[in-house]
Length: 312
Image (cartoon, rainbow, N blue to C red; front, side, top):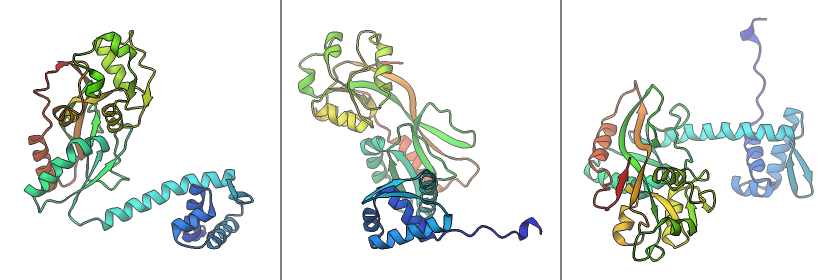
């Protein structure tokens, strides 16, 4: 028999795979049923159908408690990736035709990009941009598996060779806190050493960069303090008086002007990273992408006038 004549293995029913994946994610048939808008008994039947098809047990059932078996855990991990790929493909097809699909980090979106894109859309109403704001610990995009035409990423510029890129602006790290915490005059090292540090990333990289460049790394216990996932959360906690965080000078200008944030130190440190607009090379560069690129470059955040010493 020729290889092409060998019949492909029969796939389990898609509804059974979906029911199992959701039940595995919630650890509950009841919650899975609510998510899928079917009955709990239907979820149970679907999972049983899948177990019979695969010839193995996927859950260990102890009363109302569900625990994945080793086979169930492996299947759940792979199905999570598979269904995410299917969902991304469907999103790509159903989105507005002709819209430029842009991915950007959440803090940048809230503090600059959203306002800039709103103004761009008003100036160019026929050039539609579909923005997806995503939390990314380290900014990344996969143009092969994600439904985006372009992205704005924070990085050092070492992107794949088959990407086009244009630098928007540099990241300048600067400590920020509530005005009441800062007081009437800039801080000295002793005040910083006694303060509660707020880290906008779990690896504390931003405080380490600032302290090393200013020569204070050996005098401040930067390993301590509150840990957050995003720059936005760190800035918000600082504005509420919970400590002193690190902000990006280009993204805190509005708060500094309003007086909801203050600078306890007058030095901003260039982190070595910058915000880049990136897109795949070799494809058709749409008019919308080129117009958006030019518009963003003409409306970058302004860090002048803050009275801050910039340390390269």
